[in-house]
Image (cartoon, rainbow, N blue to C red; front, side, top):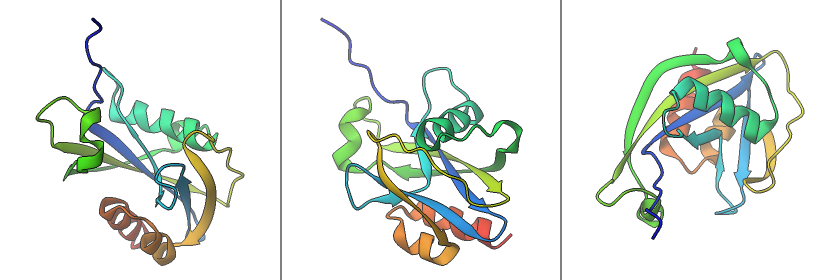
Length: 146
C-alpha cells in the first residue's frame, strides 16, 4: 500500500503588476469563475522564493530571477473545507508568503491550460474586486498603495 502524499500547508502568492498600475489576474480552470494572482504550494524542501519563481514560470511562462520582490509578509488562513483532503489529517491552516513582480509594461502570458483558462490586466481596484481570495485582495491593495 502506497502512503498518502499530502500537500505542504505553505504556499506563495505572487502579485504581478506593471509600473503603470495594471495587475495580472488569472482565471482558474476549477472553480471556473475563480480569479487570482499567481499562487502555488511549496514542494517538500522548497523555499518560498524558489516556489514563487517556479510558480511564475509554470503559470505565466515568465522567467523573472532577481526581479522577484520578497514582500517579507505572510498570512495564516484556514484551508477551505472542500480542499482540506489534499492536506494531512488535522491540518486546517495554510501559511501564504507574499511576493511581487513589477514589470515595465504588460507582457504576453503563456497560460498552463491545466490550471488557467484566461488572463486579464486590470486596474488595482478591479483586480481586487475580481479575486475571490481575501489574502489576494489585501496583497493587491497593499502593493497598489506603494
